[in-house]
Image (tube, rainbow over all chains, first blue to last red):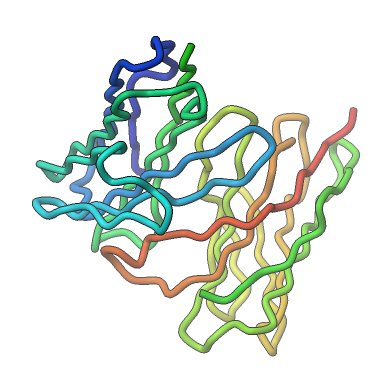
Length: 115
Length: 113
């Protein structure tokens, strides 16, 4: 299947700082990318949907000014957690899809710990 | 997207077939059944999907009932590495933003030696 790569795999940051997570589609052009968050022992919750070249669509309850999403190219989307706090500590996962594929492919996830 | 219901957990002996059920009684005619799995601390992995015919690939088989209200994912010879949470999801299959997936709680499959 297609490959989606996330970076970094894990990150520890201080409270109040910002963290950027990258999601790349390595062998296909992703017209749409999705960002999910997963807390321990819970399922994945969709945060936002981004289409290349346009603003992201956020799910209800997700602060767009706190979770900045950029999808400037067909192979890269970034999620920036601004002014991170301990409650933002979670497992963040991206997925990517395109018109040519019938299924979405997921990155390996990024474990964020805010101390 | 239609809602799905799966058992919370299941156990399977290594080398035996694992049969994971999923109920999706409100599925629409244009909705597909997708299966993903998530091994601990990793991103979900696509397994298989189908509309109404049974499907098989190198990972698993998908059996969909004639009325499409339920399905079963079959791992023919489970290994310890198949221990994971398995998600059954129904959605319209097409490109672009329809790749949005709504994850339920899934089934934790534990393969025992």
